[in-house]
Image 1 (cartoon, rainbow, N blue to C red):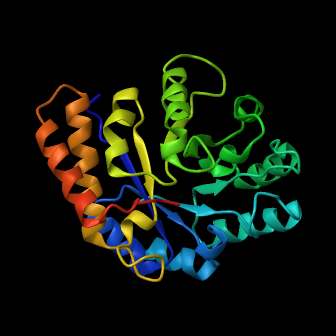
Image 2 (spheres, one colour):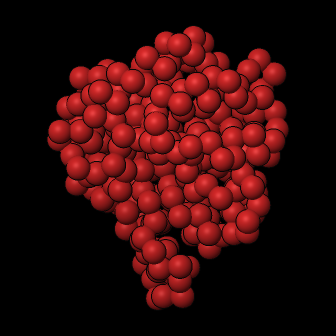
Length: 264
């Protein structure tokens, strides 16, 4: 229970990556065009970020807004281009028109990754049957994480689903052995309950940017999340960090002036 939780931060460029690392991020999700909820960055950006920071980074494989795969052949070519630029971890997820996982597209792209670790992203929150999706994807090479808010509307709506899936992940049930990475409308006050349930990974985007998406990642904002997450881990493990966690959460909520601090 005392193992450090993963804090993943969305980065758009080298400046974001350096600030996120300085604030205590464990991993980056590298994207471009947040107006489309995050698309594949350029190979030049991947190479520059990889050269600037040593922490793990996961590169988005998504060529257009929405969750349709589009041209799988183009996606495969993009995956290979990202690998040539130095990417070793990825983020992807495709649904068909009925909200079912587009297994053919996923398998074709994963085949081009040659076993690299990857996250199935928030397409799961739009799936017609998220349990069926998990079972269909179970066993695919490299799949080690699901990024999810538990519901399309965000963590506030999806918290019961997240807690239930965290419990299922404690057993041997197929489809639930991957890490649960919680993000999408995630707020600091959600963290203690999620940690108590066994969640050990958190994903933030807008929460790391006090000035909004037009501004850069703030090392201070990331550091605040780092303090809260680490303190809540200690509290969940039976430590004495409860008051510190409550104080840090209270400060953050006050600074946000009652606004939800969301992430990708």
